[in-house]
Image 1 (cartoon, rainbow, N blue to C red):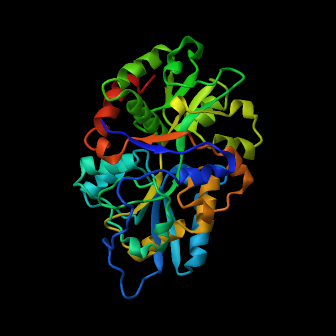
Image 2: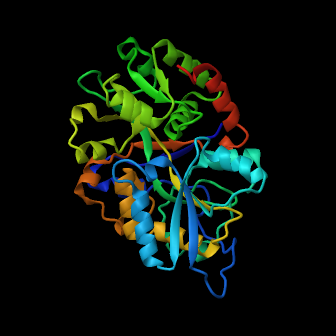
Length: 371
C-alpha cells in the first residue's frame, strides 16, 4: 500500500504557512472542464446546501453566518441549509441510484466520501466535474489539499489534523501508537466509531497507514485489550465522555487549544499529542450535485466560501485551518498560537482507498464498533 506523506512543522504564528507546504500529486493546474459558463448568470432563487450538524448548531456555528453573508452579497438568492442525515454520504449514494436528490451543494465532503461514492456508483458520479474557471478564488487554495479526485468534483474549504487530546494531570504524553497499548494507558483512550464518525474513520485510517492493511486489526485488538472505549461519534466522545472527565485521552483535533482558550478551559486537560510525530490530515470539501437546479448560484457559493471573510469565519467557528493560503486570512494571534500543525502530516489517498475502504471499515466494525 502506498502512502502519501505530507511534511509540515509545528510553530506558533508560522503554523498556517507551513501547512501550505504540503505536497500534492500532479501539478495542481486547472483545466477548463466541467460546466461551461452561460452567457447570462441566473443568481436568483433558492440554493439548497447540505451540511453536517455542527455547521448549523452548537456554539457559534459557521452556517448561520455563511447564510446571512451570502444572501447579503446575492440579494435575489436564498441559501437554505439541509442537515446531513445520520447515514451521511450513504444517504445520497442511495438516492443517487434513484436519481432522487433535490439539493444543489454538498458542504462537508472528504476523500473517504468520494471513494464511497465511486465504489458504490458509477465512477465520477453524484457530483459535477467543476469548471475551475468559474471559481476565481480556487487558485488560492493551498498546495496539498487536493483530494486526489481524478474527476475534479470537489474543492476544499478547510482542513484539520487528527491527533490525541489528553489531560497531563492524569497521563504523560503518548509519543507512539505502541504507547497506547501499554499498561500505563489502560482504560485511558476514547475513540469514535469508524462507520459513523469522520474523526473515527480518520483515526482508523491513520492506524492502517501506521501498521498496514495486514496489521491494523492486530493493533486494534491490542487497544481493546488495553481498554479503548469506542463511542458513536465525536460529540459523544469529546463533548460527552471526555469533557465529563470519564477518561483522560480522546481522539480529536490539533486545534483543540483554540477551543480551550476561547472558553477559558484549563490547558492541562487540553494538551495535544502527535503519535509518531504525525497527525492525520483531513480536509473538508464542497461539491455540486449532478442534478443541481441552481447551478450558477452553486458556483458562486463555492467561490464565496473561499473569500477572505468566509475563510476566516469558517476556520474560527469550525476551529480548523483555512483552505486558502494564509496571507489571505487574518485569524488573530490566539489561533496562530494555539492551532498546532504536526511535524509530519499523513493521509491515505484516493487511489489507495478505492476498492478497499468499505472492506477495511467493515472488518474493523465486526470486532470493534461496540467496544
